[in-house]
Image (cartoon, rainbow, N blue to C red; front, side, top):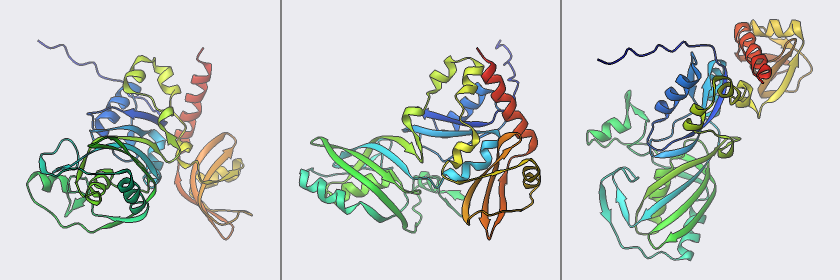
Amino acid sequence: MNAPRTRVQRRPVHGVLLLDKPLGLSSNQALQKAKWLLRAEKAGHTGTLDPLATGVLPLCFGAATKFSQLHLDADKTYAATARLGVKTATGDAEGDVIAERPVHVTPEDLARVEAQFTGPIRQVPPMHSALKKDGKALYEYAREGIEVERAPRDVVIHKLELAAIDDNTIRILAAVSKGTYIRTLGEDIGEALGCGAHLTSLRRTATGGFVEARCITLEALEALDEEERLARLLPAEALVDGHSRVTLGAEDSARFLSGLRRRGSWADAREVAVFGTEPPAFLGTAHVTAGELIPGRLLNPIEIQQILLNAQQIEATP
């Protein structure tokens, strides 16, 4: 007879965990594992990675989930390998082989294709993606053998480097705009080289200002005690690092947190991170128009108190 499962006592946890997502887990599976380790009440992520992809996956907890949507627009950087001469149904190593062609690729070919795919390009989203058509994910249609027409999307490849590993394998380093599918990029590069291709590995090395060197694995997180796990969290304001900054006094902070606009000598700005002085804390986001600070997404006073208390507990830990 199996022993009853111990019920995890959840607690308010606020912040951003930079996780190095392992191979084989979905983004949600990785999130649920980290949520369990932190005993967090509320959690979400800033965009998914395929199970076959590894790397930078920012996970948001508590108040930070209010700002996770902002990070979906961030540029991202990937390192991938592609097998030339073999096309698969999914564009990666999981799919069935659907075509094979001989490979005759020179360094000059790689340089030509590198230039061809650098800058603004158009991509047709893959069928094996989470995009929805009539409320149903495209990968669900794909599993049923149904091909759905997809409109091309405009994306930007900020930087692209292609290098041969051996006669049939290339390395792809790509810094891209939001909405770029690296599997599709790999397939399109293969077609441009005249032989077809599919990805054999994919790793996200950066998203926005978050880089792989700052990430922690699930195994390393599990090896820490509870306070050390909390100490790995970045504050919620890490998600709005590129915003303009406005600091309010105690009275204006209280009014701002109640949703009221404040007037000041601020320059117009679309993205503003707002902080208070008493107590010194992140309050939320806003924009400034004609000297008015207009609230966006806000923390509530209870969340602010919990964040300050967590910080004090971490500082007090020997």
